[in-house]
Length: 248
Image (cartoon, rainbow, N blue to C red; front, side, top):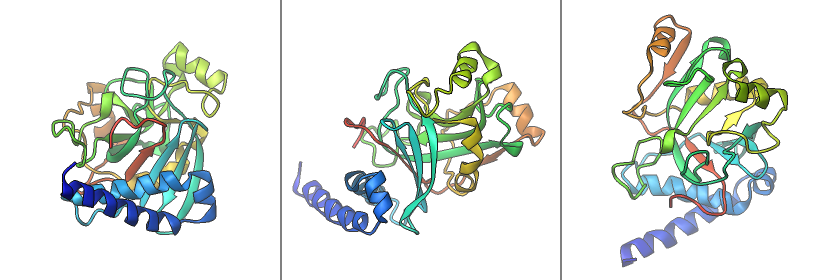
């Protein structure tokens, strides 16, 4: 590590610790001071990577150990929503069936009319429905070709249990919120989807340039049954907790 990187690492650690200390007691207890520091360091890293004004209002924090998602309001310095959230049935990582860990930014968002989980929102799969919010490798990610791309197709979404026997079983057994049971995506339970809507709409960034809605989804968008949200600015923070992070 050269002297500049060492200086930045020390600076980020100090700034992150100061910011983390200002969060509510509930946030520090529920999420943990170490994770809050990592989140603030991730935000500082994006500023250092060229997005000097990056200051996301929300960070969507996924805790695979508890099968929960927390919406962290950085202005109010606390947790404003808690909901059940399934993660990869094969654990944490970047392989198929795994959930990647670390700091990401939100890409494009799609929301079905009335957040109806019978309406497709994913690029290809009918089971991806209700909502769709991309995780993107952030500007600080070491691999320049992967920046702004979705890691291994992993996005935040809900699901349509009528689309497959696997999803019907997931719903029937109420697996979401109890055990890791997804193909890697953070998946909130159907009843909890609407809780995310106010926070998703203003949190979108740019879509992964490789996103390719199929004909069925393009038709739903044209009919107004699915609305897309995207901004040229960097999207909200997404932080997935885990002992080993797949990125800095």
